[in-house]
Length: 245
Image (cartoon, rainbow, N blue to C red; front, side, top):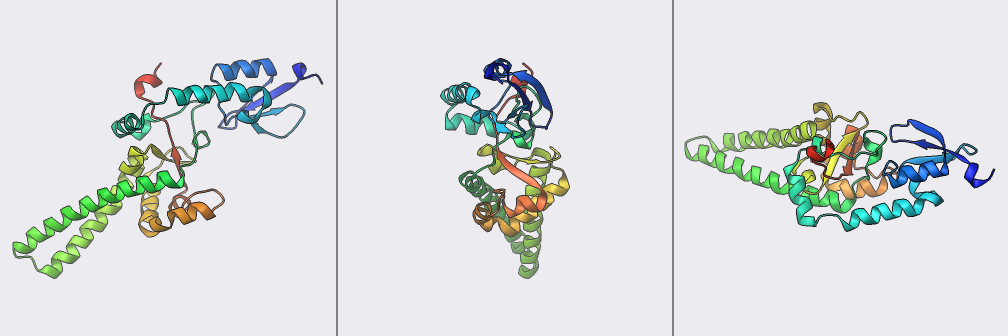
């Protein structure tokens, strides 16, 4: 069949299929931004799916879009400020066809995970200092030092779990994730308190194994991700004002 007459099927991120359409239609969709690099396309004659960025007649269009995005990308400092000012539920990407899901996003790499982890460790260290000085105050006021130690340990541990569980469950981000532009997602699109707790428990138990786990697991996910059924992904910051346009 001549190339001009060949028909194609487009699969969006949620698995919904569009078409059959011809090559010219796909090119128009790509030029309008309705097709992203990771949408899947196949010919009606073949069962094999390809990423849109790998399709020969779309490759240049999508590459140009990515180049334009990079040229207009804000500075690193501007990104950090924007990410720190927005909640996770305001950070969303759209393909033009369907609402973004886990498949829309690129998994976070080891450098980003380490950077966000260090940021969270700083927050935990500050909290530990606050607990230490609080217990020191009570000990100086007459509290038994052993009681103060165990009480401080309990307060610190509960606070540590609640910090991760609360931020993950209700904002889909820890403070470290937010600063470095990362987002926690699940297949169900919502990370509830149960998943947040499991993710938090996994961080406490396996945080030092995160780079190793990401390297050896086929999915590139850490043990805490697998334990809680979540994905730590990179995300763009899109304000609520922009989303309404």
